[in-house]
Structures are given as C-alpha cells and as structure tokens.
Length: 308
Image (cartoon, rainbow, N blue to C red):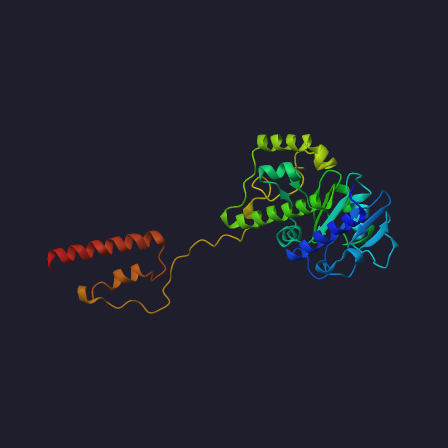
C-alpha cells in the first residue's frame, strides 16, 4: 500500500497532466484517492489543476466532509464519494475531467461502443452515457452509482467523463483511452464513421477482460455485451450518418441568369433555337429538351451536308 505522501504525489502528477493536456479548464475536474477505509484525499476546491500542490490537498471522511487541514473539497467531490467509492470497494482512485472530444460526445448524447479490439479488454465493450443530473451533490452522484458497478468509465451527460481504478495511474489511463476513442470516432465521421467490431471478436476480448479481473477490477468480472437499449454511435444502431452533416440537395435543372445566347455566325444566325435548348431556355421537361436538342443538331448537320 503506498504511503500518504506517495498518494499525494500521484494526485498532483495526475492533476498537472490533466491541465497540460487541456482536459480541464478554470477549476474544472478533480482527482481523488482512498487513503483508508474511512478517509479520502482530493484536489481542493477553487484551484486550477496546474496549481495543485501536495500540501494543498483536502482530506475528507466517507461523507465527503473535511476532517483535517484547511483545504476544502470541491462540490463535485460527492460524485466520487457517493457515485464511486461507496458503491465499489475495489475503487481506490477516481478521476473526473472534461477532455474535449469525449465531452463533446457526452454533450451530444452519444455513448461510445468500443470499436478497437484491444480497448475492449482495457475498458469493456462500451462506455455508457449517464442520465442528465446536477453536476454535484448526492443527486448528481445517483446516475453514476447506477452504472459504475459494471463500468470503469462513464460519459456524464452534458458534463464530462469520470473514470475509476485501483490506483491513480489506472484511472488516468482509462481517462486517456476514453478521449483517444472519442477523438478517433470524431475523425472517422467524414470518412463514413467507425465500423462495429464483429461479435465473435468482441466476445473473445470480453473473455480476456474477465480473466484479468484481478488486475482490472470488479467491473471487468461482469464484462458483457453492451445493452442494446442504449443508443450507440456505431453502424448498428446510431449510424455515422445520424450525426454527420445532412446530404446536399439533389441537383436542379439549370436556368440561365443572363439573356438568351446570340445567334452564332457559323450558321448564319439559324441556330438560335438549338442554342436556346442547350442553355436551358424555356420550360420544357428534361426529356423534351433532350429530344429538341437531338432534332436541332440533326437538322443542322443535314443542312450543312446539303450545302445550303
């Protein structure tokens, strides 16, 4: 078990990494660890993650209330306490942040069905979206608590991302993976979107995930198929087209903006009718335009060959 000083150093390192990667802004986000069965340590309120220090971390009880020192826990900390720590005994670290690509999906209401085989082993077959709730307090923790027993990472509706782990490093790696998947998903949209993994491959990767539950945690032991009732951004239930820009309208018949074309000199001024057909004058249908053009061209060829 790491010492208190080592855990504090881990929090500070992760906090600075969140800031350096622009996964938080202002005072957003927080990192916490379980110190003992009844104490937690967390980044303090009203402090940018790039400014967090080991001496400035808040120490709380399992109700999220300060028990020593001057540092105060953030209001979002109850999401960690009642959404994660009090639900899963195997969780020893929680990271909450707003990485841009993953947060964009969370704000658009799009959960992630994992489309990279190795990622299924690391984080499961999907990263679900919580129902919308306040960003703090016990009410905000409820949607997290409903899902965290079976998942190690969640998209928080119109909010951000929360990940858990046996230590800070594992929780941070999961946050990194969520953002990596979200970025690839976004980049793939103009190319037609990501493709769903074959069912047999997903099953094989989930079997590996379950076998590694001793390292990956309690949620890995429950690893199964994504709930079909939850909308997902893959080709099976929420196709990329559903989130891509609309298709351009069908082309319309061209109508000239300028005056009708002048008679051409080669024909001695006798091809104005043919030119008007070519340039779309009149209100004939496309079939009649084609027939008229064909007749006009044939007539001109015949006239030219006859020497008239």
